[in-house]
Length: 377
Image 1 (cartoon, rainbow, N blue to C red):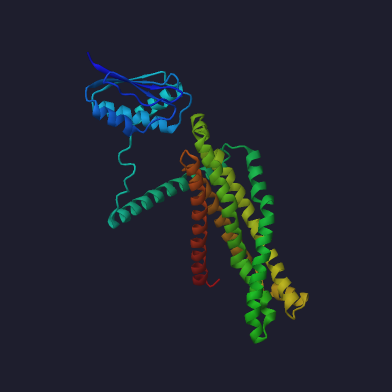
Image 2 (tube, rainbow, N blue to C red):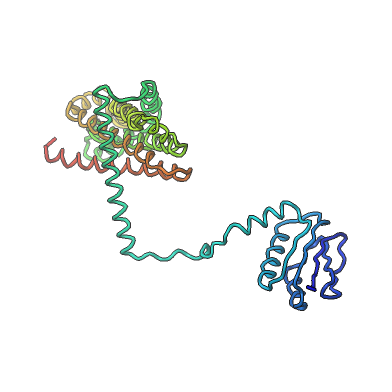
């Protein structure tokens, strides 16, 4: 007949009794350490069956679960039959969960160090893949734009109006603030240097040319990249998580036409207007410094501005803003459409959209600078 021992949880807590191999171990509300039970198993090698009775157990916590798991593993090693009686339902559920979920053996191991050549190769592959995906997205957007001009694009007109409002009227406060500050900074920095030569009147020329050719379109583009480009990526990324884009494709509606096209059109329409607005406010900011801090009258400032500005400078800035709008809209929509299906992926897509748009704007501005120099503009 097999020897059997019983661990009985009861109250009040008596002492542990081990009169014989077949005797009963009674353990009170304070669970003993696993080492106590293990030492008793060592002292009684004839035990073939062990019963844990928790019928009178009043409360338990994670220590009790650890105790049970340790005893279970030890009984498995010693080929001892373990029987658990009267344990709370919560304990049984957690023990079952712990038994069905396998332990990750290498979870605590450090990641293996990648070689330099591996990192370079992986970066090159990722760059090539991203370039192909970008070209594919640009091609789809171009086809969608052609369908719009042919009257075959399918999207809601009310969406276009809402995006125009978001890109236009709702963006005016931040564009106003940044443009005035940029004009103030340009005028102040320029006036400090020009004053050394007694040529502070040319502050108006400096601010007018800088705002019209470069800073108006550039600052507006960066603002819209952070505000609108990030919003586009977050919106489409959330729709990707909720499988709304998949639903559109299932219904036979092109996501490029329905989601990307109205956003692209709205930003392309609003960016030139915002750029002209930014140019004007930048010149007003320059006038505040020129008239308020220098010996320049308002009439002189306006005269110098009018003589300096021409249609070429103004159109150059507007042309840049249109291209910046395309870059921002495509970057935001592309990163949103490429987003994974988790909250973290949406955040990464939003960050990537802003970075891609700003890098694209700076690179495009550099290309414009080289072209303008080559063409003598």
